[in-house]
Image 1 (cartoon, one colour):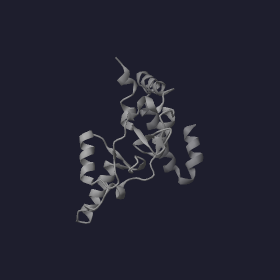
Image 2 (cartoon, rainbow, N blue to C red; image 1 turned 45 degrees about the horizontal axis):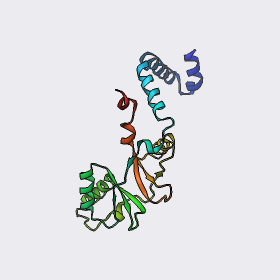
Image 3 (cartoon, rainbow, N blue to C red; image 1 turned 90 degrees about the horizontal axis):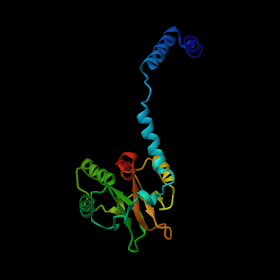
Length: 186
């Protein structure tokens, strides 16, 4: 029956194409294994653990910030001291202008090597990501996770309900990874 279906869809390619596809189907049948129940149970528990939770339940409170004109050496030192991978760039009133990550710094360093010169005049203002994805403390954790995944980013800046430009924390992939069911087990 499988050979007949493959012949119908791949027959125009000739008998060799049909036979090669049949080999693939047979290998898939022979090599695919059922996912063990304990792994499925852990995944289900992990999903249940976030249902009903809000961003405020897992976020890291207090965003580490810098100014747009802070020297990059100071930013690197701050990142290293705090063992974090980004800072929120804020203006004089504490309103968010962008996000500067270790990835942004690595790109700048790579660029300076390619140009065979140092770029000491670069500042956070030149390197930061200006279109920052945000969340609010009361947003559902599942919605925030969906935004992280769909946008392929590592973190969301948590902003104040009263002032959507004022950062109050970070929700990162690290926060999510450390909050799984295994970390809640005795």
